[in-house]
Length: 309
Image (cartoon, rainbow, N blue to C red; front, side, top):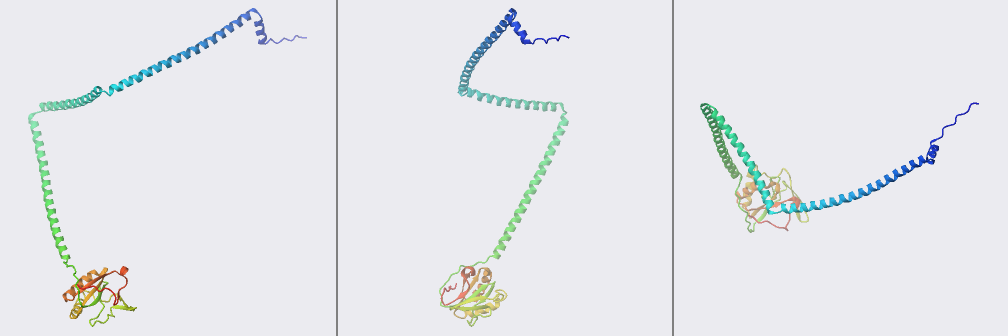
């Protein structure tokens, strides 16, 4: 039979073998010494680091105190009159330097122009100056011509404006009509009413003092006579001026006067008809009437009778 080979021992047996002999003991002691030495170094390093941080912290606090003291000192110095005056003087100095620089540049430019003029021919320069003078004279003449033309136009416009104002004043004077203020007076005359509506004249009474049933629709109710003028009837104060004059002349012979009940839309007709009454020397009065506010036209024995003017 063949012999089987034994498997080699693992490393644990080798470690045990080493520890059991004298050489292994020496190695073990050496390892322990190295471990203890490293631990002591670590502790010393930790202690050194703490002391270093404390020293750095103390140094930083000292630097901070010094910085604060220095800041306060600089602040006090900056607020002092001496430093303020120095700052003002420094700003003035900068302005003067800038002004001096500008003056130097201007002087240099003038020097260059003088050098350029000195190097040029005087005759050519004289020609150039003469041309510039002539050109400026032409421009000045053109500007003066424009000013003269503007003045002439202004004068012409002013004349036109004055003429237009004069014409407007003449037109306004023609459109205006002098009127006197009405002055009422007591009278024992009997009143005759005329309604001014639709720019026409509706006479409430005929010449014989009877009701005008043709131009006005009458409605009697409870002793009150309501008048409703018929549209497109009545008399036009311009077209029927002769008929109105005859009516007013006939009424002027009697002891009556006429009152015009005038609506807001027929005031021009009232102006025309009252002149006809005045020409006939018939006393008249007028009553402004608004149907929306004053109501329908009604006549009765009880009420207010306007006096003639």
